[in-house]
Amino acid sequence: MLNQDNTPLNIITIGKAFKLLTKDKVYADFESNEFYEVASVSKIVKIPKILILKYYVKLPYKRVAASRANILKRDQYCCQYCGIELCDKTATVDHIVPRCKGGGSTWVNLVAACKDCNLHKGNRTPKEAKMELKTKPKEPSYGFLFDHILVTFRKTKNA
Image (cartoon, one colour):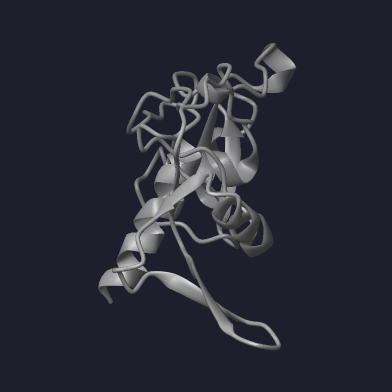
């Protein structure tokens, strides 16, 4: 579901989408082929995959949790030390400044790393381990979570 200005708001269930449509609170583009078909006893209802609110909803600033999954998404499943591509099984999350040296579990202190680089670095800073980061980590915006979903949606749409 998108806000009136087309910024992503949330991912909603088909049931919630149906309620919003019947209460005439959202715009829907039925001309595109991007919809779900839900069968009831008497008819088939088409529910669009993307809905736009008819009114603007002002939201407070939201922060994205610095979870393992979100760190890997931010770093695009790429080791930030050697640059190799990672998968869920080979990926680890490394504290740039180790926790034993006062480093926290924050966006700017966590990076995706392969197992080999993480073991080589150990409880040292990258400088002490003579390793260099490919990119400086930063905290993403709240929309970052939706960007990944929208890119995936567009890829499946164009396939």
